[in-house]
Image (cartoon, rainbow, N blue to C red):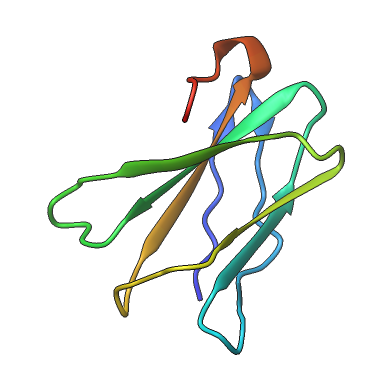
Length: 92
């Protein structure tokens, strides 16, 4: 699997690994920074460029993780965006 990385405000972001669980769930642990939130995005078809926000996760310290418990299509792309806590969108 390809694990991409982006930079935000000069800060490097690194996905540690992508783990597919036995039940089909996808576990995404990543490096993290205190006082920054992670917004998790997914896209099922890159040709349509229709990224959807899944959730906002507060920083877990040095490492933050999230599990997609229902990755319905066979192929799904993920993006993690790092934002200062005060700049993060609200998510129900």
